[in-house]
Image 1: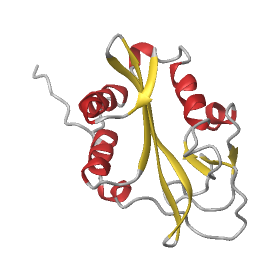
Image 2: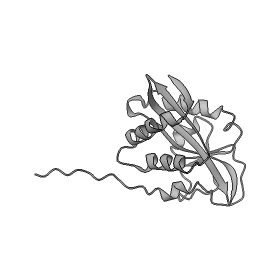
Image 3: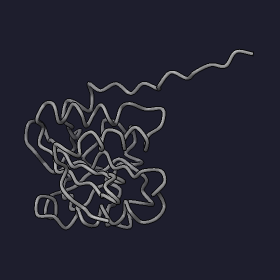
Length: 171
């Protein structure tokens, strides 16, 4: 298993992974594709096993108004066949040690039980626009006490989450 930065060559594999890891949703793959197309700053890594991308994670800028105030971890995905084997945890530990990430305030909207293992804690501030009560919004190295709604790259809002159409069997 090898961890490396995302390259032009691995992008298509990343999109395929996101479709497999989030069945019924095109949101994550379209989000990452739009971030790539628009040249948005992101710190991205993949985990490769037998020439296949089996895990992916990205950090994008978090904003307080127009100022960058940290990084958002989103999305993070592991190929279904490799889930619950520590692959995602290993990739996240690796990313948290990288120079571009290790001293930044970090935010994630996710499962508190999972992210707590890496030092993420519930936060009251900033407020996450995608989590009404901040119940699943966590932070690491966040010293903010000023009330504000944290901003995301515009691609997070413009990529509309829509379920894939289901095929219907006729009886």
